[in-house]
Length: 583
Image (cartoon, rainbow, N blue to C red):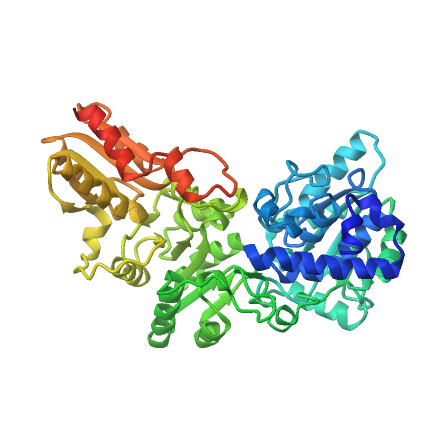
């Protein structure tokens, strides 16, 4: 690392000549590949933005000049230049740094950002604060990789255009979103690329921005020249740069969708070194929906920009044909459109990651639930996990379970999931949310009729004194807890609740007859969740309730086993607590 070893802050690159900067860019790509090949991470977008990040730090004066990254998909090169190169070179330091911008790591980061389409809005706030305080510095928003399709991005652009002061928006156009682009605005980006930025139809100019186009978005010299020309500008401007996603790594250049984000891999072969054997619910769901669409053309599958994350790979999307809709990174639009598709007589199924569903609260409530249209929403990756703070899956359940009219189901097995999914698609009375299980478990048990899993808990084991209610992912934890209780001479009742939008009051009331304690287990944050509803039900009775789940906190890359211990979500811990109460 002839050049990178000498870089400890952005000021160090200002002493380098263009040829040296090009050498630095190659070393930075090597460093990025070193990290992501061991940990996994965002490969393609970061490799494509190396020269642009070098040029930004060469021209501007970070942290006085403030650079705000969208999604952080493009921030790895930024971290390398701002004192965090050890996170890419030293394996012992890999886990000390996030894959996203984080002010706790560096004064050059201004926000914890892991979700999309936010950079322009955040930059607007920084710029307005600067103007009110009569300060002088540049504010730069970096946006790309499909983020333009998010509603907040368009809201941000609309307001930034009339700010009337310095605001520089760098649009990273690598001809891709996470998968292929979807939406009319990308047609305009293509037109601008094809005309070298000269097309009369220019959405940025139409909003009121000045506009610059850089065709060679991986040319350091050209980027530096452009950024110097717009530095200290007194009005909003868009700098549209055309980059190559995955640049410098052949596998990432050739298969841009697969290499947007990847598991750990061997750099030479491009083969994943971390493999998951057996079925996944992404595969199960995709194959089920393909079969369903083949038989029923009213079924419509919706996705908001992240199809690979839920098993909808290109070949599967092709099989779904016109019955597959990717709205881009626009989850709010996906929910509203699903509601309207149902109103129009179709059978919509919208697949969304738990942490991304948080953007849809108003549409879930207003556009879907109030209208009571029979759309199905499948929530993936829900549950306590070791993810970074921006991608936690433990908040969807309290959010959705407290919206009227939604039927919220939490299956425990593959068979139960498919039964609920099929019912949800065919019924015409309710909007349905299904929290897709995490581990594929086949119980080969006869599945209940719809009216049973809608309104009745399943009593899997009838006992006395203690009742354990294990919701969804945590039914297995309930089974393990009941087995340990048996060794203590306690024959406990075990219940699979199946749904979490309301209570089976008849079953809960029956437990009062011969149960002293009810234990609830839910794979989500406790505050506002399902367990609290159970506790409230028993509030004026002699039955005590223990609720287990996650604390209301943002955890960041904490191993899940450590979290289970922190929250006492281990069978032996739960049994210990139970024994203290009943003995």
